[in-house]
Length: 142
Length: 156
Image (tube, rainbow over all chains, first blue to last red):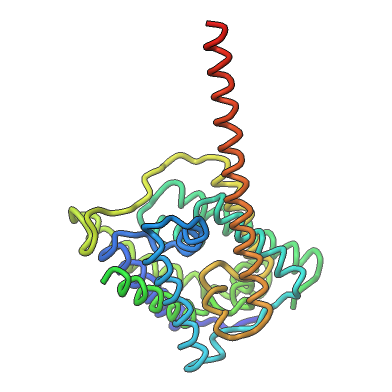
């Protein structure tokens, strides 16, 4: 059970929207994390610089959070076997589906892209379904 | 300059994820658990991000080009195909399993904890496997196509 935090969550959302907007306005790029990381893995030469620096910014932001507000980075809620399975699914799924919560869920939905609207509805439903199975049918988690 | 902007955007993005609560897997699961003790906070993260981005993107895309590039690099496909739906389903299921999507997982590496590192390594491996698999499929398809073409040439 977690507390309802509408104010900080809305503020965090504004920052995410502003960061993604900055990428579009200045660099003309979609701030989709899985697309950026997948592109780095694929090693597309001309695109490597900005992608690497965006990821570096993410990691640096994590360090700032860790220093200023360590509680904002929560612990894992599952053990290693499930983390590995979940990681493989998230990695494979975001590449096959061309995006994740940022690229489809924010950038694509905001532009009313039909692909992103379908993808976002799909991963939200799949996430809720998986949570239901794990928490209410199998009785796992807390 | 483009790289400086990318770094700043990544940093700002990470702070937004942290302040919004996306880097707490328990909170993500609490949001997805609509049948349990539902925590709707993350809908506010998405709502806030969508509000800002929708307005700025509309203004930005009405310009002929972004500030630092000659053109916009924005996806134009509109077709709903099977990889999109299957991929989103797999991603969503994995997200619901551990409570990590790609951005928050990368940001959470700064905690120095082993579990999130294991998740990120598995995620990168999953991405790599998909890319290899797609490349193989594409190669097999072009091989079949060229074989069919040479058969046609011989018989024609």
